[in-house]
Structures are given as structure tokens and as C-alpha cells.
Image (spheres, one colour):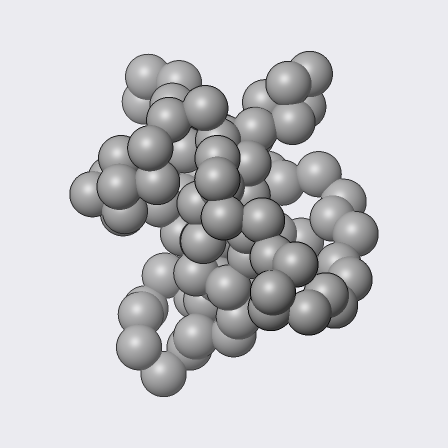
Length: 89
């Protein structure tokens, strides 16, 4: 499954939220992926979240996901928010 690092997904409001205290990883719900034209890509109120295979960055990059947010996207970039396919437990 997919996991969020350094943030959590609020299912009721369908957007990114700050992570709970002492919780680094949060499981993402099932995501419907669909291709759209770049011109139709929503840019306001979304964070372009990188997705990696593991917590090791760089060569494990898979794709970017656009996630809704109430905050400015820079907040999540500075927090280091990413989605992961594999989480060390």
C-alpha cells in the first residue's frame, strides 16, 4: 500500500493534514489514478507529492501525485512530505 511520511490524509475532508504527534507514517486510502492532459491539471490547492519505493530517496522515485491541501504547498515541501510504497516497521 501507499504511506504518507510527515503528514496524514484526512478522509473526511479529502486533503492533507499535519501528522499526529509521534506518528511519522500514515496509511493512504485506496487511490484512483487517472491520466489527464497537463493543461487540465489542477494547480490551486494541491501539493505535488513525490512517491518513492522506499525511504531512500533518489533512484527509488516512482511518480508524482497531486494531493489536495488547505495549506500552501511549500508547507509540505519544507516538511519533507512524501508517499512511500514500502515502510520500515
